[in-house]
Amino acid sequence: MSGGRYGPNKTPERRCMPLALWPEADRTVWQNALTPGTILDDHLGALAHLSVASNYKVERGYGRFLTYCKIHEPDCLQAAPAERISPQRVRSYINHLTDIGNSTQTIMARLQDLGSMASLFAPERDWSFINRLASRIRARHKPAREKSRILMTDELAQLGYDLMHAAQGNDSISDAVQYRDGLMIALLAYVPIRRKNFTALEIGSSIVRRQGQWFIQLTPEQTKTHAWFETTLPPALEPYLQRYLDFYRPMLVACTGRWQKPTGDALWISKHSSPMTQDGLYSRICRHTGERFGEHCSPHMFRDAAASTLATEAPEYVMLAAPLLGHRSFQTTEKYYRQAKAQEGHDKFTQAISEMRGEG
Image 1 (cartoon, one colour):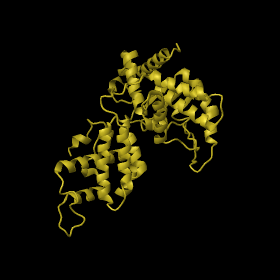
Image 2 (tube, rainbow, N blue to C red):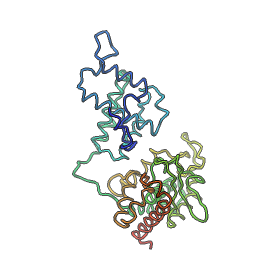
Image 3 (tube, rainbow, N blue to C red):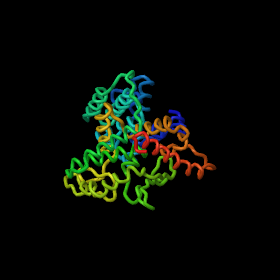
Image 4 (cartoon, helix red, strand yellow):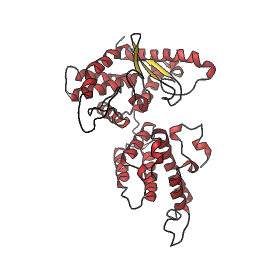
């Protein structure tokens, strides 16, 4: 593999980890599989009979899985190769591939490559769960000609408001969950930060109130671009957030169950009284958007909606809203000017949504 595929010109989450950087155990198994052996060499040559192109495809596919692990679950790189390919991790990997815009065919190919490697790592183990996951993805596949329309941010925000309005006035746990889901959707529509950051929002640190306003703020260590991010929440959403903090979040924190974990200052709480996971948040958002729009809209697609909405309603602010979408694009010499203009761009974005929803 060339270094360029893992170099700076490729989005980190789409890069393929070169063989030289694989964990030693993984690399050894792979190299043994490609080395022709004799009838006495049981550990050699499992893939030596295949074409170079076929093996290269598997190598690249598994390299992308390792890149995912390095970015999102680096500790698992210390585990044995077969233990690393767990059902939960593979499901998270599928969600990640969907989030970054991979097609159904690409995701199925990645699973095929992963299954090939899993069989090398532990040939005696049952890896059929990978095939089952691939079958589910195949069943959901729509022909390429059925292009999905890009939703606009006001449509997503309205879905969030509708869910919250339907839940208000009730005090059951299911209503608390629905209100939370509505707030997640509305807030993500206005501030479409990356799923990892959105899931990890904490009261008092990454979502804070000062000088009479609510802010979302992320440190360079928390962002993909390693840049500070800060923006205000739209005034229209503030009373809904306050209602969640005062009434519905405490209801969820008070729940009990076998999956209960310390909630700390986590903003998003599950019905099991534990901080929501990335996969849990992904599932809830996809469920509601699927029911409303006829197809799932993943958290990552909220970013596409924001870009499309800006391009349509406020095209002069598209470039200035790059920090909102988590894009690294500004030169150091323009840093302070751009920071001020970025907030102006987000304010215009929020104003456009309000006008589209008839709030202005």
